[in-house]
Image (cartoon, rainbow, N blue to C red; front, side, top):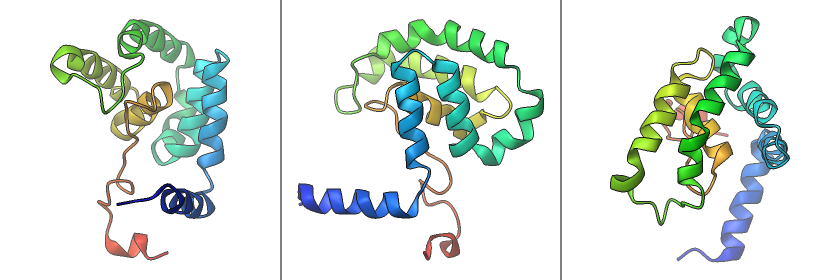
Length: 143
């Protein structure tokens, strides 16, 4: 069983190694204050930079804003849902719609979509990429 102090120690160790956590916190504050597009751009530029850097010069911010507006009803339907309480059969179509719309945007794509979804509802969505799901070769995790 994991105790709270053990968990807190692990989080602190992660924060020391992964310096981008501060950018996530900044992005969350921007979301809370109504700066959704700015929050997403900051997250993409720091947590999805491997893909976003190739798209940034041609990134259609207004088109992205429109997509977020179109997805707002889906996010509203998922508000208050957590990973522990979620009923996939009742709300799975909202997740599918959100993921499909975001993942088709160059610079967001398959790894950026769940990161943005997590930004909007961190209690329901989990960020994932090759590093998070340990899909990289072992040498990437030595340190």
